[in-house]
Image (cartoon, rainbow, N blue to C red; front, side):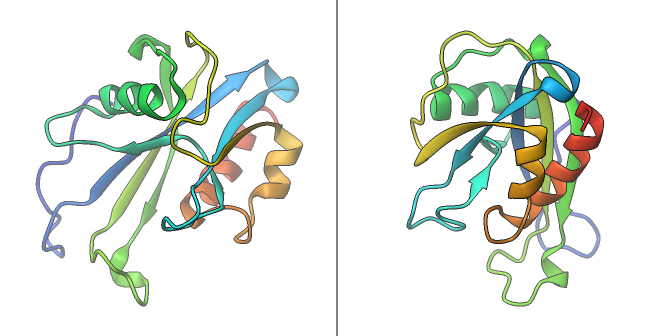
Length: 161
């Protein structure tokens, strides 16, 4: 997955916003634990739990963006070779009432099985490691943004829940 989205789709005024996130996975199968970060209060979806990540900058590949975002947000170093595409979710702005950006959003979730350093909440409010059963209980609108909920459901199935 090294391509970037460069042009708008026919029904859009601008290209979709491409966002990347990481499922940092410790353990295997049903013993897997994933790292979630809490969004800072005062930001969109403030206080909700999400997979760490961020926006892909112009000219950046999704993997390079995720390596950069994980360094900025968690203070960890990740080799792009340790990232594997896991799943994705799409938000269609036209289907949402009150959409602020008017842009579709594509959220790519990568599995990350190795990193250097200890994750620290550099930008988020807090971090927590959760097992797959706990992840399932957090995947509700009161605790997670909508796209992260969609990612959780698929990630649980792919990681062995």
